[in-house]
Image (cartoon, rainbow, N blue to C red; front, side):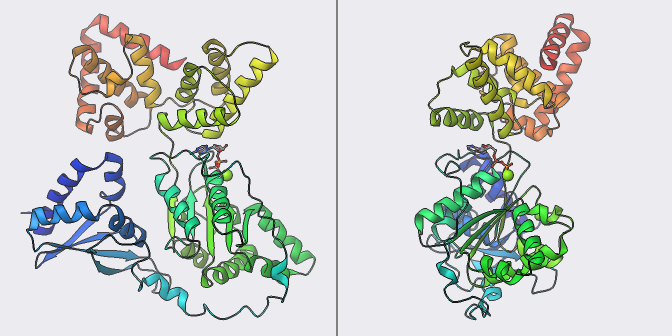
Length: 478
Ligand code: ADP
Ligand code: MG
């Protein structure tokens, strides 16, 4: 028999899953583990302080209703939060908070364990700061175009974006210190990091904000060693209020630079200054880092940027065109967004080359031109077929609207198109069955598996069908 707390939580999850979007459910509820049920108090374990605060702020109403439904009016909820603290040895420990009665404000738990780490030397003035140095004007190195306004929000970046926004409202005073944004290249880390800096500047014009590329930081440090003015280097960084360091992975293996950054980091953190880092890997995968530095990276929040979905990619292109005052036919924009899926910088690069071609050759931009340009572009960048693209090819082939695949309809042709899309997605992409199902009409992995079997069977038994499959396959490969 299942343990009672597991059973209760599973029932709660059913209700919750029916009430919020799939993506939110996956992000905020799947990682939760039920711990125990005692005297009608259900304890659930959440992975971080941030998680707890987010649940309290966004889902407390739903959680309470669900708990009361399952456990009756005396039912209550308690959180157990895993705290990763380098002060308590390497093992994470956890603290418990009862669920709030009202909506919690983000900074509510005053006895936040993270604060214990900060408190000790907060008021010790830095003996090195030279009086008058603060008057030096620091050039922030921020790029105006990389603003929040120009940063399109989507499921792919919601967590990082909202954490960034919260920081800009309250730099150094949220639990997200440092904020570490990570992702593959070209997905918006640098853009978002600038956006945070710009927003801090706009909310608090007197704060000293500095954006620095990690390579720059390393070179400055090397220069300071050469010129024997390391102290000035350190002092300069210690007076920054919001320090944004881009591509922090480059510091890997550079022990001396890590050492000096460690001291700067501590100073800033202890003085409630904000630190924002970006990296091409999550902290656990960063090799060549001093453990004590790495453990500090994990103090705040690590948030990733994922590959944007089709709508978000289209919105990003439209925003860019709008900003530059350029008009482009919608089918061209759509084709671009379909074809280049894993790197926004490349997608923008293709856009620029289409624009250049059309200006140089005085041709109007139409789908024809776009196709030629993009195909050239995509071939050079080793194209990866996406689920979106497969769906488009299948729907175009059967001449049906793309929405059909994601609709609930059980019409035969549409079911077949959906099954084919699933089949080709399994064949040509690295996505899991569950992901494929999610993107093809919100089905589960079993449905995808069934679809693949059905298609395989039909290919063997039905000549006409086999011809369809072969033709679509050819179209996918061009
Ligand atoms: P990274 O630092 O992750 O390699 P960048 O921040 O340089 O990526 O982003 C690459 C390009 O994509 C930039 O031109 C950026 O403006 C654009 N971009 C990325 N994400 C978004 C977004 N969500 N909205 C608008 N533009 C974006
Ligand atoms: Mg970058």
